[in-house]
Image (tube, one colour):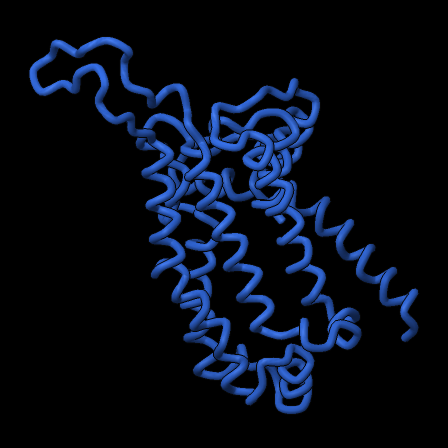
Length: 255
């Protein structure tokens, strides 16, 4: 297979994935609603129409440290996830050599997780500032007290996610490496072509269960929603994202 054909496969697969992924948030919300015996939103609303809506909204300067860098974080996250997707396409594995390995996959996932921490650390939502005058209620803080932000809670959640929440995901991710004796994605595929899929072995089945739990944690999905502080009334660092930057975040999370 020549290079142009490989590039065509990658571009085609990425375009299809970009379209399909925008419908996945709606399927997720619809499924959660059915479990809770609710009607739920339209399948197209949480992902597809939300992305279109934010793409056409006016861009505002966020209340954040380094506003320009803060606004670029969702775009960088989208690019990191796109590279993750590309290196696991078989037609790319042979061409990229050392980059087509589990180490590269884990490294890019860690980079994506750190970007979430930056989102939380840079955001300074106006909803969480203390009042500019003394609070007379018993036990209340007074003027000049250190301000705290809800986003700090999201940053703590993100650090917990990196520290131990993603551990099941990475344990399951390296089961194929142990069974094949290699971290190279091409070698892992070749061994399964010769001996059969790891999925249908005992370690594969146990790894799949662990992987699913870890996958929900990595996606910040219920019941492991570390970053989206719904209990805090707002959506943590996502509150400040409007317009196309929120659209980039939705696309990155869906992809």
